[in-house]
Length: 239
Image 1 (cartoon, rainbow, N blue to C red):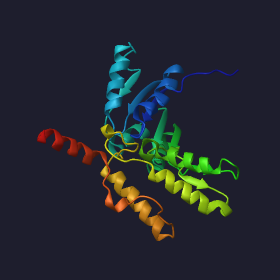
Image 2: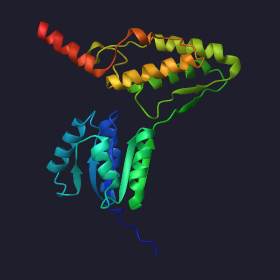
Image 3: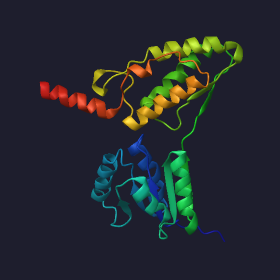
Image 4: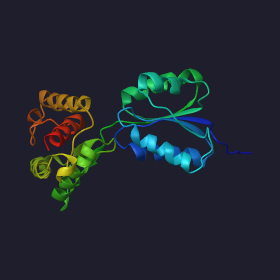
């Protein structure tokens, strides 16, 4: 006899890059299968979860079914993934943090679900849509300022068409306008100075390993949310 039953208490740890989307991807199936849950959103983007918790309460979800705790990974995340009363932990984030979640969950042999970072390959076929495909791939990776775990950040093309691919990619990148969210720009800031510095480091590492930078001037541009917030405050003060 096969009996389907709820897993139990689910610890849900969500990232900052798609905050409300990732919350729903975890909360909805947990609710549908009869589980209770404790949600820990990213400390970098906590407000979507706070509003979501208010919506759940207003909708009449019984007390104790959905629970929200705020905090960072080393404190709240570790406690949640290692707690003996949590039957499953679902984590979306970096591979480094995912390894720690799995380690913390191991002593209690709880179920672990992970959605970690990666370098998704974008395979461009050798056909009449080649240039269009390269252009589309560049534009796709720019979505959400490139802050997506499923962004096609690697492009595999036929070796004999490499020069053509580079030119198509360069043209597509140079068409992207960068600026503040209210400026009509196509590409906004990344989430924090930490992420911005990480990106600069990866670009430089690529150059050091023999890659060629074909578009953009990363050294001459500042682009994280804190800088833009400060600029807006200064502008409002001057007005």
